[in-house]
Image (tube, rainbow, N blue to C red):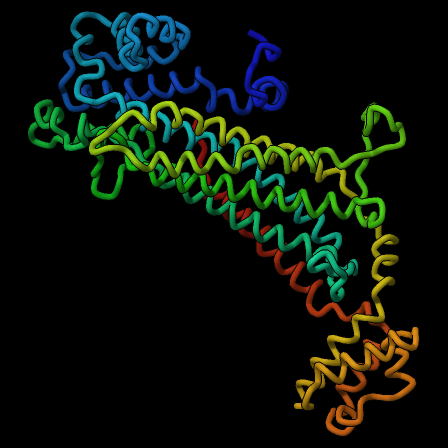
Length: 477
């Protein structure tokens, strides 16, 4: 089978079409990876039995070689006979062991002990070793863009209309903060994923026979070897509590939502009539099949489109919270798509990280767009100061001045400079405040508050936080 035989676009066009993304996701998100992680859990169980003195003789060397010796394709072939994935894995493992060890393979656990624990470990390793690294790379690129634009004045836009000035760096720093918080959420939820080794109904029935003195000992040893936790008290049904995995997937999808929002803002700033951002065009790239002059923001559009495809899938995870009594199979098939959901969120991050590297500010366009509305900016400071000095009907007074300006076909600044400040304001306002207002009238684009300062503070905060996160993150293979 090649990429051209794939039904899913993730395999045929996106993740599966690029050597780099195949290399990064292959050890964690594929069917091969799923079986290898299940094998890892089965081996950890046998190692626990060895540690507790239940296995005859010393067989740890044999167990160490199992994970390299068993090919996932062999397990899939065996499943054609068993029609049960875990029993197929058990049969293949047993075929590699002598008769003394065979009875202990999968002795005690239910299938979900293996699959739920393996899936938690798969996801945890993928997030820590691949996804977070890519997100941190994107965050660092975004910090650089925000720092570069921290002092570059840009018209603020609310409801699609010009508002008051801000800076481009301040707009980007907001995404730095939002993405940074999502990175922390993903990191924290990965650390809280749980496994289980508690038997058919989660009550340690079988393990109370295997190790009567301490039925939970097997679970403790297995989880320690794998680097996982159980629920705080170890309680479970046949399946592990679903909420920790749901929380992680929610963190992944909401991270993707922040990235999609960023993609939207960037591509709108690239509109012909706005033009405040440009994107480097690589040699050979084509924007249109019929218009040779076109350069389209297709990477940002692609990110938004992928988000539309994958964000709704979080609803499946919510549905998978519900399982009848100790367990039914209604989450069996749907649960397998968790890896595809994570692959989609990861690939959206990849596309955004690459696209962001090519973004450039067009400061001339920013100045031009700012000039369109520069003389309207003074309305807010006039209103704020009037209200501060308790002038009655301050909003109406400034609104009337703006209407006068429109009627005369001049700017609000011109009206104020020609007619003077409103009498009430002139009588009550101190000289220092009037001087500040005069400065805004002369240079309305300077009315941008703490935009530059807050942008730089935000960038510094998240740069430090990323360093701390990198220092505290362990890696698994």
